Image (tube, rainbow, N blue to C red; front, top):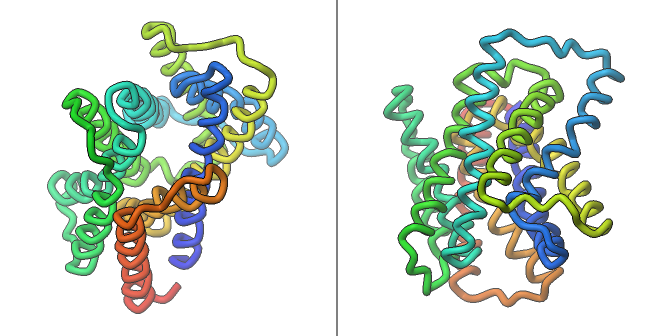
Length: 290
């Protein structure tokens, strides 16, 4: 099952690495980060409901499960998106994304200090190497401490999402049912955030809605379910390290689609991250059979 976990987690990272390229196209049409995140979750609610009905899944959950979904959904996803996209107004987008992707360190720290999990030497080494690789993506010139704080704190809240899925037992729910409730909670939270901050744009061109719909399917159904299943099979720490493949994917798609330049620093970062991921996969595959 570990092989399946590797595949699903890396696939989710590739999806999440590609969708910012598509999302960037909608910003020139009047959209923004909060609006995109809102529509991303709003659009998948009826789709997930149809899937649940077609598969005749039991979508009833307990009050306790609903509380956990609200907690993880609001803190782990809605606040993460709000802070990350807000940080773009203060520091460069690339720097903010890279700082956000230090979240695997926070996942490991939460699991180690709060849940008293022991990290193997290989996991620690992979974590350090991958984190160093991430730092090579940081662009010089990000001077706003508030922007840096927002980007880093978005990594902390997303780490809570990764840990919460595993430790609060939410991975035991059917992924379609879980994400159906997640989508409702997050859409409501982002609606409130968007109204309060004045960043929610309701009227957009048809093409922007189309791109938003595609992003919703890729991220809020395919990508997030792959990530949740990866956490289920591999655990939050390993899945979070594998998710570091996302910024590498963003660089690759940026070069192919947006004709962006690959600097030597980013190339070194890609090599370090891919090396850490490969080492982790090889170690775990020897440790226990797939």
